Image 1 (cartoon, rainbow, N blue to C red):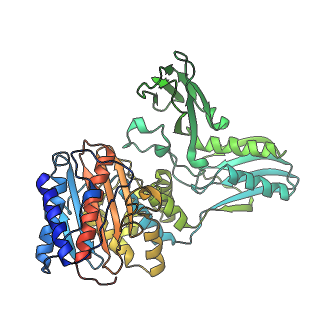
Image 2 (spheres, one colour):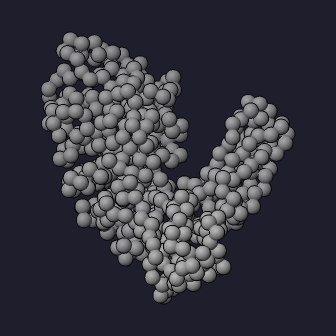
Image 3 (cartoon, helix red, strand yellow):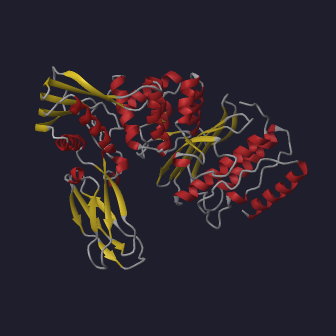
Length: 508
């Protein structure tokens, strides 16, 4: 690598003779690189010394290979595809090979959602009633998979019922029958299924089907103290606390696991006496029951009596009429949560909603049907979930680039909504702390992807007065820490950006 650094230094000196070029550094302003890995902050600008396209492409290839063939990275498997919006190939390395995309798979379900529903579409949660105020024979909330409902949503519902003079509800029904029955994807790792990012998706989602457990150290040798942020969700768990308080500054060693399919959490390990509160976001075991009991609680707080509460999981023939309805934010906001924050629950919910709308048995079948209309065939990828949490998902960098290009060819409003749903470099979402203070900040919109051993970044690079590039970088089989994988990906993007600055300006 010393040769490569020397080469870049030589190039920088030559650049000074030929004029100033935009300098993309430092790309990583927050995280430090390993000492043996070349720091992106030290990477000088590329030299635009040769107008011949082939010579420029040769240098691009050399600089990319200098990064991925570094001893710390060369055991990883890399797939890279860079094209213009028009489809001209700029650089490809195993671009047609399958890789696990991690959360970059969300690009597929979000594209399908936008194609089928449109950016302004709003999910609706209708509430039906029988009887008249002040006493209702029944009140039925029909969930339709809205992932944005929260405790505040329940308070809003109760407030509207109060305004209608309702004092008592004989039968409160939570109708959880709209979407396919909630189930944990069998391809997910079972150690993940108690976590917030692997919760089951159902028709009546509340607070993202998640509750927070906080652990606090006590005196050395004593059990840690724990508490829930939601007493109703806490009722679904039996906690076996075997975690103890350790001496100051000991290495963090807390584990939380359970028995699959059982309402049991086991706390183990030691928490240093001077450790800050240890926060765990965990999945709610029975989301529909949680929704019922939470709504019942808020009704009670408003002095609205509920005689009986039930969960309906089958599509019964109800004769009630719509009383009120709760609308979600526009789909563009939901897509932003999916792609900027990489929210698994939102992605899985959207997949199930599409299956219902398109009358398909599964989310994957619905995604397949939708993407075919923009030329993405089911044979070009393998999906077993919508969120990218599964290790059985497969897609090539070329297919992701093809998808991104196809979405740019839609109507301006749809193309804009899709691109704006992606994280913006140095600005928001999962790219908030990446590319800060560089020429890429605000000029790169992309979807990240992270699993153990997997890293991904796919999106649009739009430098001022330069042709927009579409790219996908997928890394598999890496033994490195995620920050090291991210740094290597970011270096490659910086090199591609500098290459583009050397190319012809198309103002696109």
